Length: 166
Image (cartoon, rainbow, N blue to C red; front, side, top):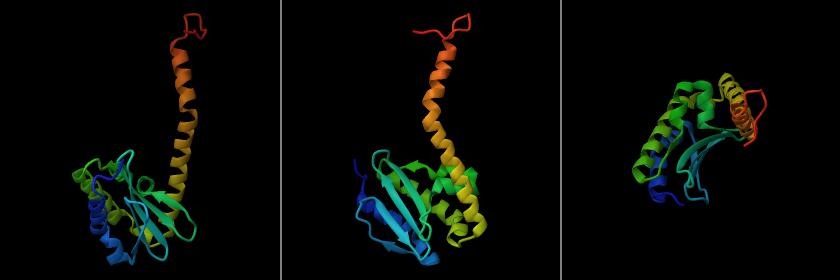
């Protein structure tokens, strides 16, 4: 599976995220993987990438000094939870890809200011929130199947309070 139009992806990312270069001093670094563009300044890298198996497009912000990285949805969960769902979009064809990138660029322009400015309160809030979200997803991944099996067993319980076998 590949990007619907690699040159369209690159062109749209450059156009949509140009505010990073113009306003925040980022430069666009080359990346060997098609469907991945990385913007870098002295403090952060912002990677915009296309996941071909799911058609999802992601934005990941990484602090260069600590190596801490957060996906856009994790950042929005902390600072703009009402917008979090908008950060998860896909681009199965050229039109959807452009719409998704436009949406992600808009969210970044609107909500990454505190991160890029190294605002301590914003950075701390994102770190705490991302840690909680990651812990929740890890627990769901680890125990979700066990919980489901227990629920199924409970539903199959016979009338005498014993777990029935099928």
